[in-house]
Length: 528
Image (cartoon, rainbow, N blue to C red; front, side):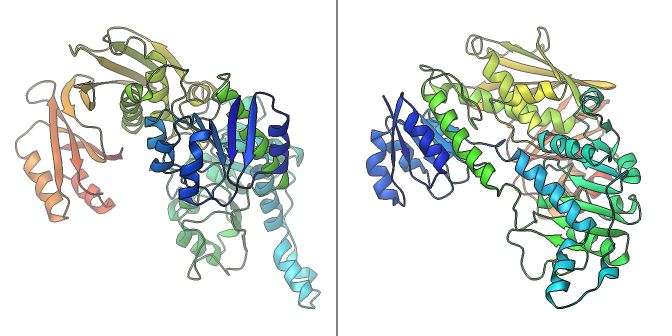
């Protein structure tokens, strides 16, 4: 009989579900100190928490019988996930339980902005009757543009269809066929911006999507556009949006998320007429909280009984294998996937994987899921983890297969990944030196030996004298220290590939100066 400890307040439906579960016993013990939790945790097989309990390395070490930590909600910042993985403890959350709530809040915000609900209410409370000031905009026959087309965006699209809106979407990692299934046309970003009467943001946060709503993109939108952001605060240049609202370019906006939460009094959009603000309420419904409680109970019970490991944020495994031996290979694969994403010239459509060596022969699935996780967590607006990465790849129409002959390297244990996009392909190979030190050893025809870690400057340049000196001098001028510089070239005098580990981040200005050097063909900064 498995024992489950609930250490934070859980919705009553979840408690009732635990009471009916025959394979487990549960105890509710709230407001425990760290010392108290460490003392009692050895008696339990699973721990269910919300945001209040801190699951530290000390708690995990004390939990000799602990197999699962279930977080009722999305964020796992209060769990030491690395320590949990090392201890063989599965950590899971409930990223999908609030999808409907967030979609409905998106539509609530859209309607409220279009019909001036909040200012009209405030006016009436002030004793005014100013109907002419609050003439609204109807949704019927308007075009709604969705930036990102994951699960929540698709729910928004379905609701918009009920209002007889035209819905278009931009998501370079979703095929047109996916949109056609629910009557949504997939467009490039500039076309979406020019056509949309309302724009709603539903994309993941990455270097490519940061400030996707900025002065330039706002200028490409229709005059009088309405913007909704229920997704990530850093998708919006808040100062540029404020200026567009003041100028009349943007008619109105609704924000549920902010670059810094809670926003302070100096926020450029707070208090600005035409802007509706809510304090990150997307998931705040009774139903979402009920679903969170029931889903985490179901997931924890399934994991304890080894039936399923849905929504695990670290590697799920069957009884027996030592996760500490698997995790380094998965971590390297994840970084290879991230590199492939950042280095690709357009959305990746096909992935081939080859693994060689005795240490890897039984790890095809863990390596593949690690690879997909690293690639897709930069693409999808949904939470991507080792469990759902293959499913997300399938939803995006990305083909994944095993292959042979991808690399000519002769390392004893080697994983190679070739990706294809429209008009190009690239192979990256990696290994663990001594079974523990991750290295990238091959990028297509370039032999190289680099640690995939931290801030990495990746450059393609002409193989001519002086490039290292010029780039090094420029970095030094900006106070950026080089930790390691690795260089590979296919043929003398042709092109060279440099992968440079840096001790600090680079500013856009520094990158621009490097890019302007005559010998530089391509440069990008990747954070691993």
